[in-house]
Image (cartoon, rainbow, N blue to C red):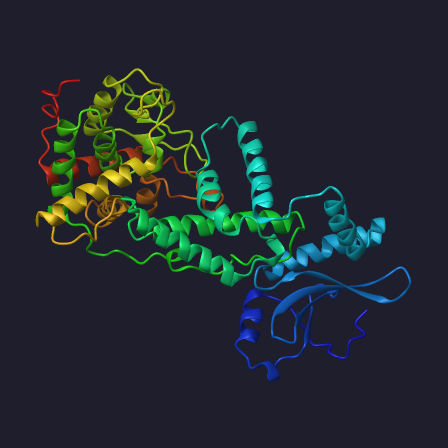
Length: 442
C-alpha cells in the first residue's frame, strides 16, 4: 500500500498539522501517513500547501491516489471519515473514487450545470429555500438580497473554480466602499455589510464543495469581525438611561414608527433584535407573562418570561395594529414583519444626533451593547450564575453534551433573573411602569 519512500507514521490531528506548518519547508517530509487509518496520508505540495490523500490499489493492481481535500479547509477527523467512506465504497461496491469524481464532473458538464458563482449561488439558495419551506419557514433570506444586489455584480459571472482569495478580498472591499458612498445609516463604514457578504460567500462555496463543483473555498479566510473584541465600559448606567429616555421620547415624537418601541422591548427583554422584529402575537401570552419565539435566528424555540415592564410595552405594541406580527412593516401595502435593520437604523440616527448635540461624548455605543450590558449585570451585579445568564439571553447550545446531561428545570431561575434585570432597568431609568405611555394616543 505505502510504496512511497516516505513512511512517517503519526496520528494525524489538527494540532499536528498546525505544528508542521510552523516548520521550515526543508524540515518537513513530503508525506505523513496516518497511524490510525493507514490509507490516509497528509501530503505537502511543492509550494507547501497541505492536503489529505487516500492511497488505494486500483483494479489493475497499481497504486492510486485520491485527493480528499485541502488541510486548510478540512479537519483531520473529517478527512479520516471521508477516507473510510471512499475506501468502503471501493472495497465493497467497486466504486473507484477517482473515476466516480471524474464521472460526476462529466455529468455536471453534460447537464450544462452553471458553474459560475451566480449559477452555484442560485442553486444553493434554491436548495436552502426548499428545505426551509419543508419546515414551514417562509421569511425571506437575507442572503438573497446580499448575493443578488451586492455580490453577483462583482463575481457572479466568474466560474467558482477560477475565483481566488484575492478576488474575494477585492470584492469585499468594493462592497464596503459602496456602502460608504451610498451613506447607509446602519453601517456607515460598510464593515457590517461586508462581513455579512463574506459569510454568504463562504456558505456558497461550502455548497459548491459538497456538490464537487470545486475542491477549495477561497472565501475561507478569517476576517477581523470573526473574533469580536470585548466591549468593556462601552455601556454604563448614565448612557443606558440616556438612550432609554430618548427612545421613550421617540415613541411620542414618531407614533407611526415601530423602531423606538421595538428597541425598548429589546432593552427590557435583552433578546436578539432580529427575534424582536419577527415576534408574532400568537407567541405571546400576557396572562402567563410568557413569550415563546418560534422563528428565531438559531432555529430554536426560546422561553422568554415577561416582566411588568415588558408586558406594558408589548400591550402598547399590540394596540397599534391588528397584524399577526407584533411589529408589522410600515410601508403602505407591505406584508410581513419589520426588518431588524430598522432598529439598527433608528439607533444610528439617534446616536448621531446626540453626538452632534454634544449630549453623548462619542458614537462608540451600539445596539448590542445593551444586550451585553444586561448579560453582564445579571451575573456581576444581580448575582445569577453564568448558565442562567446565558439562558436568559438564549445563548445556550442544546447540542452540547453537558446540556444533554443537565436535566435541571431552569425556567424558574430564568424568570427570576429576567424579572431582576427588568427591575434594574426600572431603577436605572427611573421608569414609572403604571404611568408609562398612559397619555399616549394609540
